[in-house]
Length: 162
Ligand code: PNS
Image 1 (cartoon, rainbow, N blue to C red):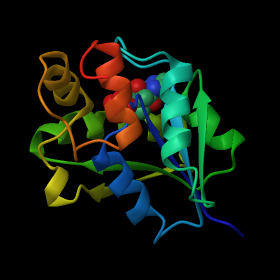
Image 2 (image 1 turned 180 degrees about the vertical axis):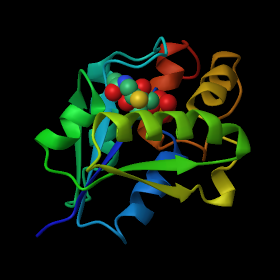
Image 3 (image 1 turned 30 degrees about the vertical axis):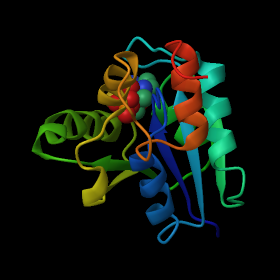
Image 4 (image 1 turned 180 degrees about the horizontal axis):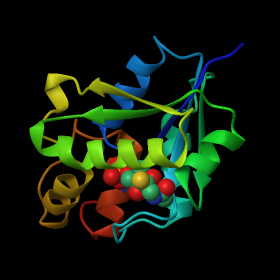
């Protein structure tokens, strides 16, 4: 049977760190669904539709990667998609507390769903969607840190470059 993993997040916006994690996850799982959350504790710069469209464009050439939006509880969505695991990336010790809390809450809500953590590639250790947005909003160069479509979308949002 196909092993499906759900890679959930706010993806506001998708970074090269996220892309790298999906590619590595594909070595473990048959299919990865990048699940863009409507309900996230964060206020977003991009709408749900924009976040989904950007991720879809980035993974358009990857047949084993699907991008979908989801609303409501993550565990309900994981069950609906018959996925075996939730995939999350870990950058540093600072991520650990938040990730541990979410993984345990998800486990409390659904015992049969496992959370699998992959360490972020060292090249992307220092980047996050938040820091990317801050730099781009202040006119800094984020080239090479996010996919090209995302770079363009950021400059469009902040009214920089073309
Ligand atoms: O990478 P992020 O942006 O921190 O992702 C957080 C996300 C979207 C995975 C989390 O907020 C989530 O799962 N939201 C869906 C609603 C839900 O199930 N919340 C309880 C999670 S313990």
